Length: 357
Ligand code: ADP
Ligand code: MG
Image 1: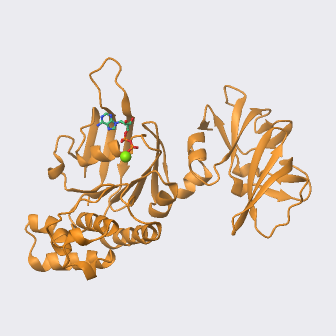
Image 2 (image 1 turned 45 degrees about the vertical axis):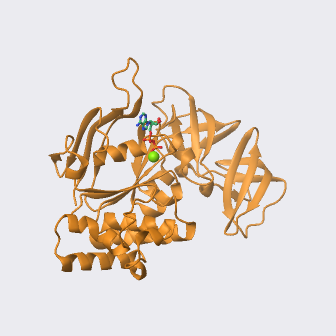
Image 3 (image 1 turned 90 degrees about the vertical axis):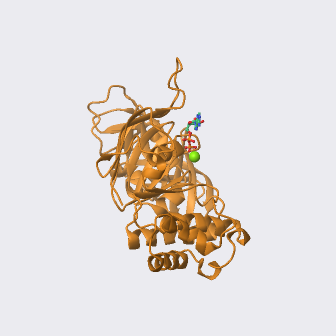
């Protein structure tokens, strides 16, 4: 396993044209040895490009890749000691499941007892033990993907296992179990795992560290809690969470207050240095509550819709011309008419030019 540094990396697939398009804008980042990362962002934002730069399939237009402080930028994939799992399974169809899993170890001349031990352990974790002697081509699509995953996981000596949307072909129930298995593998073998996905739930349930990308930029790196509570940009607030963060066009009216329509809302942000009074206020629907009496930081609103999601209710309300969404306790009685919504100051995020102040 290795610590991986991406230092001032950027990439264009057409660097020599007059107007090169950058699939990745310059960024630097460190992946700690043994941790679990998810690279999360919509299709086309540069996730695969980033992963392929680490594995060596793509050479970055600028910057360096270091494994344990050793520059590997010019090393070929084979020489980087990386295991990569792709969206669709790659298996040796003429071999048995056992032979597929053993292959990376055989190629590196591991002793037979070590091969047996690793193949047994990994096949147990991935529920492939019963199929070890079967020809790999006879297995279902998701089992084949498990073999691909397994081949990445059998080697203890890899710098990292890189997975690019690996569970796309796998059904939802099994996906959940597999993500848990991957976590177990990470804890047991201390394998650095990097998991690319466009699905926030996958990212949040799998990783301790999430790298959020948008249009070739790394917009935030943090824990699920960081991304949920303090999104760095309005994009992260909108992209992470369900429903998306409430975002209001507001105006600063004092050093800590903004106005939503005609209502003043206190925030815990220092607004004394903003350049433009027009700023955005972000607040998660989870933090907005319906309260009896109006008071500080309450907004009068009309109930527009209440959706019952079983474990909570999602309330959509209208205040002047703002739509406010609030997640409320499913037992809480809500009147049909006018209600008071409380927006806690300490949960407010304020954005200037879409960036958190
Ligand atoms: P993601 O994996 O997040 O969907 P990619 O890294 O595949 O994103 O792509 C990022 C951008 O680079 C996209 O605009 C895509 O069209 C472009 N791109 C990806 N691969 C190539 C390539 N081989 N040649 C030219 N452009 C590419
Ligand atoms: Mg991709």
